[in-house]
Image (cartoon, rainbow, N blue to C red; front, top):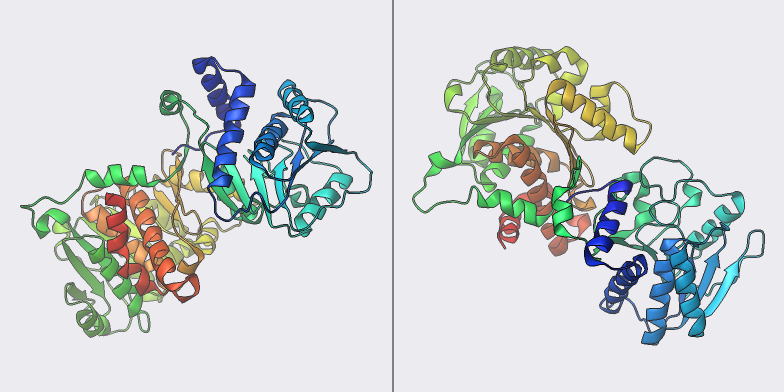
Length: 514
């Protein structure tokens, strides 16, 4: 699913208007009708029992709110409309809809600057249709106070139309007092980039895609660098590698997991187990000498290789059958012992020109961040899977805001020709071509020890099975998050542990097959 710029969204609206020979008012009514249908089919909303307070601006987003107020009024809802008079300019579409609701006797009032705020009954639904996607300026202290009044009132629900009013579409701003806090955001047709940023989570609330009839031929042609991963895309990837009746384990890849140190062998067990659950045919696990029994007992399906020096850490990395290895996952629980640091450096020198796909995680990333020159040894299309703190250590700096973070991700991916899987809510996949993919699955319950080790094992497994680097990253994060979502519904977010994610990978596969 494409994430479009403000200009592209406007073009999509206009293309819809031109291709169907409809007016902008008719498109506005269609958008309002889609929002209305969402509300009446949502059991959460008691439309005829709880009053609606509809806050409108004087632009087209306000027109959406006016159209919606008329539909709710006809349905039997108690509706009061308030014009938030921040600007003296009115769009033609707004004026047309305003005349319509006045003719039908809907309660309409205006809130003027510096007047006392009207009393709003707490047991109400707020419809926020003040500003739309084109809003790009800050508001003065009076209106900030009004927004704060709305945000602190704790209404039954605050439903923003398209975007929460005051949220900038395409640039960061720290004026959070000037944004309405929505509990629900009904956004038209495509996700909006700020919805995927942690700074705006409390303002967007739960967001829902509302279809307003954009044309598929326009969406297919339009070019973008940002994408939102959905099930349809994952299903299309999966179909290309669907298992065949007369296949055998050799058809599904031979991978290798490298990691572990004293007290951290569990991370290797989790990563290796996840790689099997994701479908790999054969797996070697390389661990310190004293990790042999742990892996052999925990995972009899794996071939276990060990560092020959009798230590609790890795001193040397030797792949005896490297020509048969399709992909490598390295770093989980490996530690940063000086001998291990040297072992990783020597390994990267040896593998530089071998063209074996590789996923680098955890302590291997920490080693890279302490010896940044090792980044130059990474084969093209290597995958790094940092969480935010690990990425900061790689950069030797933090970022100013979420837009700056995206810029830094793209710069590093392009510079080293690598993929970066930036872990977190809406895990971001940054590609060497400059594209960004935002994941749509996962939940806070997955913030638990071992979750990242599992993701590395899953991505490595997909690489081994012959998926491309991009496909492995995208499908890996989606399946990982989906397995976590299934576990969350059964166990609760608080109760999830890493093994629960592994145990639901199979059900995640069943969902993408549908």
